[in-house]
Image (tube, rainbow, N blue to C red; front, top):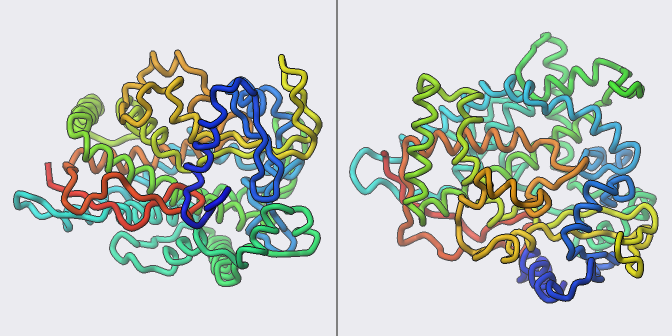
Length: 464
């Protein structure tokens, strides 16, 4: 881990380690993630067992959370055991395709404003404009999530420096403590919780808790109903206890739990989708033939749906889906998946290998995505890798941007929806090419836990 968060990106550290042992036929190799003894999974079959088949033994992530003293850490991503299971059961119904349809018009409204802002920035004259797209994509996803999670018209597309955007940015990069205590949180989460330590900086905690409480109070007082995530969570809060399909009785959400879910939905939804859109446009600017093919495909689908962007027409854009899937392979936003062994686990077919109880398990998703045995010529951007035939011929665990199994990304449908809508709107109306300010290759930020870049991504943008 030498150079971690200093001058080496996590993706590169894991990929180098994976390549070192890739040809040795070990199902896993030992790895110390800071102070955590970890099993680093080399074998795709073992990865499938951990994530899906033997999930019950690997249901926990083993992350720090302290709901009593630091309520915003008590979100679905961090929770373990029975608490995770109950929260997942409560939240899963809010991310069904029916609920996505419910939120679809809200996202479309933001995307139309997005296009208007772009039209203002790109003059009709030939040559277009040079635009920093990373910031623009982040403003779009901030507005989408702000509207869908909090029901707030943030309008960062027009006024980039809002409190909402500033706090979101801070929540991704700022830590409450210096390196020593952060390292302690990460390596000894249970002890940190017993010591009643906190992780989220005070100003971020206060901002989001106040925002949630004010929104709740206002909606309940005025009896306001909206097509958004917050509305569904308020329903869960008001329900009290209720019975799930399997007969289990589950309690409703309290304010702290509700705030934590909104907080993680916000962080997970705005950064990952905006980065994916930025990397996608960056690749399309370098491969204008693929960009043109995508533009024609979008137009053809829209012609079959009366020229309208509807839930159905977005779902029918198969080539757009392939382009996004290939972007996520080449630029895996979250580099690895973490699980923890609840009991000793003997590797099937390899009895001398045992993952001991309490061991952290690392599935290096980004390294799999660049393994030439799975993806020949892995550095090449090629959406045809995700044609229906090629996807059917591959094992699902060879592509893990959203994880897999019962603990995969609960908001996957939402993330895909806002990304597809944003890209479909842009590609129809604008052409993206590289310019003298475009960095090739991109320089990634070692301080970011997700795949971020140092500085902006500049492209030439012209009207079509």
